[in-house]
View (cartoon, rainbow, N blue to C red):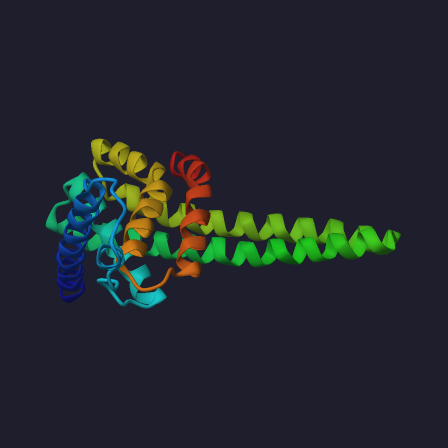
Length: 214
């Protein structure tokens, strides 16, 4: 675990430096005048990407920064670090996998509705009813497992830290979305899968807050 934490810190400082450099370049560009740019100026405004990371690598960077945010804002002790961060990482992974799978399940429901509209049979209506029940059951199963781990995480925190955790978690989707946009600007061509995951996680904010308080 100590080695993994060392990796997190190394990745964080590398990423932090890159983001600062990219932000400085972006601000400098925004401060230029509005005169028609020359060909050389246009080329300078469209430099090669600073990063060349794959989807998996970008996801890892995002996750590392999320872990850092939790550690910093909650002011975790050394003992808490080794107990809380693995649970938080697992919750982030669970949520990302859940929304990815849920998109696929929703596509399946759309296909079944399309078939029903064409045939309008009683049997298809029964199939739709079962599909809805299964969909809700899978959602309930996920959130039950999610809440179990979250309760264990909260048990490792003092009351002020629990409140801070809930506040951080409520902003998780928006924070991830902003981070992804920043990384997109300094990475190679946009990563569609990562963008979809960020939007899905943003949509889950309210439900996550509700489950955290139970």
